[in-house]
Amino acid sequence: MSVSLHVVCPHCQTTIRVPSDKLTQAPKCGQCHQAVFTGHPIDLTAATYAKHLDRNDIPVVVDFWAPWCGPCRTMAPQFGQAAKLLEPHVRFAKINTEAEQALGARFNIRSIPTMKLFLHGKELASQSGAMSAQDIVRWVNAIAPSAT
Ligand code: ZN
Image 1: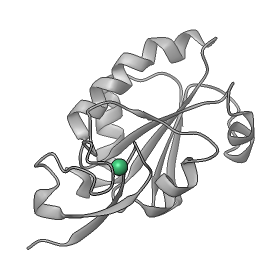
Image 2 (image 1 turned 90 degrees about the vertical axis):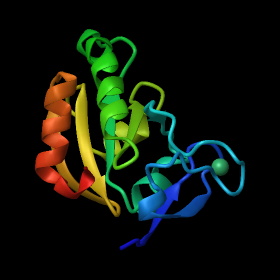
Image 3 (image 1 turned 180 degrees about the vertical axis):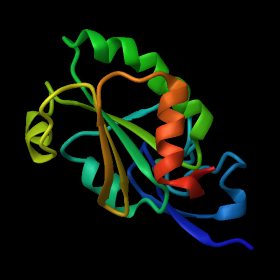
Image 4 (image 1 turned 90 degrees about the horizontal axis):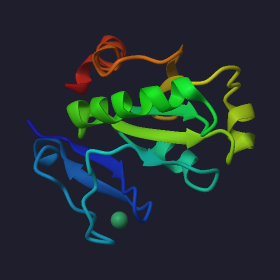
């Protein structure tokens, strides 16, 4: 059975509909015609984060990080690897808390890296400290098992 999922395009921020059985078939945005999933975490800003957190029907994992943070840089390739493993069932995103200080405050980020898992705008879980790709995948699957 196929249901229609809303997914927010990371390129033009348009909310598109993707039949769930087409999710894994490299869907393209109807508006900008680019691939909706690229296998890479997307960068969210104050202008775009709310739409991605609220409108996606798939869980969204956000890595709150900063360029000066060593453990964040260590985790970045692991986070990217986890994105490759779980997309398109989960959207992976990053928020640079140095560039987007209001968002760090908005989400009460006290230490970085911190990962938060959202579904339909609701925060389901939060996890601080660098993790390996396998641990990130395990963490997401434990909280949002429908993801894979
Ligand atoms: Zn688009």
